[in-house]
Image (cartoon, rainbow, N blue to C red; front, side):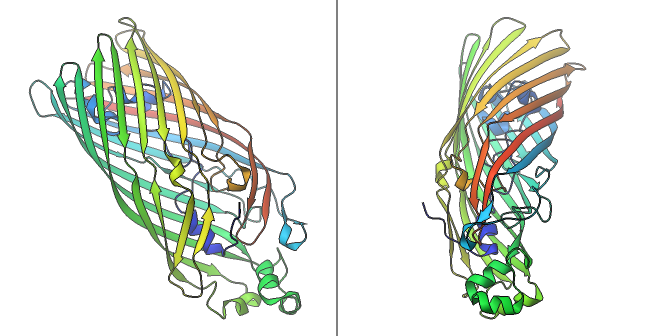
Length: 447
């Protein structure tokens, strides 16, 4: 499979929606409920009683008595280390890449979520909900001068989802719901540019040598920012049979076109490379679709103390087969990057146990596939791999109207092999060592 060699800004914008060491597969963020995290999000479409159903499955809002407001914060602590195993530039006879191994590419991030649920009828059969959360994003930053500097330095994607929804209890056993997702995305991405190698390939060895352009010795810097708004929708249903509830929800794709501005810091001896318009400030855009998801859950109340939940999430990451960047600058052709991502599944099981009327404990396990199956597509902007979750949590009720939730998760990753080429031909060969810890707290007030 051929990967096109492209300019630094092309690679940046092409990855504009993947700029995160995210805590879920691909660049998704699952941390939308502190209470749910305690049981690995198993049972999300049947509801956790904290208002997060306004996002996960609006139909489950009919389980909530009266009105509710909930505010949660998740602190995500990632570790992303890189072990070099022969990174080189095959365009220069396999010359090894110099520099350090990048330090910890993970960056601390906070993910807040706010939920409001209000009943419109005295019998609570009709509910309105509103969610403010961040279902995609996070950030990463590698040390200056590391071996993968031409692939990535800093990557930041901030995505905000505004999600009004409505639910109706059709019968005592069946509820349905729907919502609208209004999403804002903002990205900032940087990397180094090897003007030495660009000079050798564009001007020839003799001219580049006269200018003092040396591969890996004439580095510049590229930065791109971009943003956009997109709209989608979500649908859900919940069915109750005795002490067992079944939930299903669908979230649509959201189309985004990130319109950005690319800038370069060009070394003085590389200025001749800009003579035809390349490596100069330019507007650019890249279109991408955030994937649709289908979630299934079953939750069973074993007795008045113990509840069990199981869930699965299908995510259509296979929409990301290529990313095409269109430049306003006529000197810069379209940049096409093949991704070859795959559709994924996530499976989870969890339990909650009511110790006392005031205290409930939770625990869960989860396995999650990665959409990236080959090292050639594993960029340091998102060194994703299959992952396993272990979670725990607790809910403390000060009274029937004020509840405090705590959650903790540790995420283990499989080995993440890299054989990823940069825009100027350098191949980052090695393996990523990845782990994530998450600590969360939320306050829920019922009215």
